[in-house]
Length: 435
Figure (cartoon, rainbow, N blue to C red):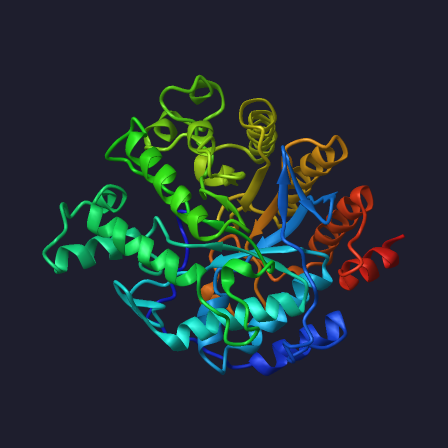
């Protein structure tokens, strides 16, 4: 999302952390497995038209964002939060977690400079993947940020500028500067071909990874026609597929319609949304892109609108994109971020419950009808004691029983439509309790 906590260069308090882990242990029961060799067998997620598929059955997703997993896995004192979060998510029946597989420059950088990597941080990402595998959670891994947090395209441009080879100091030169594109391709190849030091599996061969995301919320405002970003998407998506044919791939879009799409007038929040250099349909049609991604932030887009009007807009926004997936793209549409800010002047926690329920009901109906609305990932989940990483959207889900119930009910009702994988013991146990 466009406003988030960067986290770089800060010292984070860990007071009370032991008690927070203990709380999760007591709240969810069970234990955190640490022997990653006793892993669960997962299959690659595939695509059949507008549906995700696993082992021959449709796979509709209830999941979440925890962007901080790799960053926390670097430091031993914060590392237990990673296993605690993944286990908690699994026990809520959540099947996919979206997280950052990048940190370019700065504190705990994975890529210290172009082509130079910190093995300590790569091993932290190894740990995240191994721990997710242990709990039966798949990962949607994002490869670079459009924003400055954790480096992003700004860091790539600065590197080229500092080396005296950059064509422009504009952040958007990330998308067209040949030197910067080489930097990024080298990064992608290094990551996709890495052999996990814990599991022994190359990333490109690991079904724990649900899919790759080219970029978090790409925008190229210097070219509102969209041609520059489209060229980059087509080039980079084709490049990823030359290295990794096992995994699905998405762009990482917010979902706005571009200047040539008639829906810019009827569905976009306001006129600014068509001038960002992106276009949901055009970008998602790229041949090597397997599914479309959309974000949902009505209170950022309509800060002065009444809550009831925001809910109506959310339904319109989602149904429009699901329609596109079905009729225009013939690809799944995955709502990879959605959140409601607690900074709204009339905010009540119950509003979040209604907001989540509105989104979940649309996904549920899409699942029942075998339509393109393939799932949704809440932005964002934490364990206790992580206020320094939070923004105005994050929650500790078990702190509010009604919210926890809405999340877990969604997991079970999706599972009942298409069946529960025998490998997913957490989901099976959860849904048996709910019958």
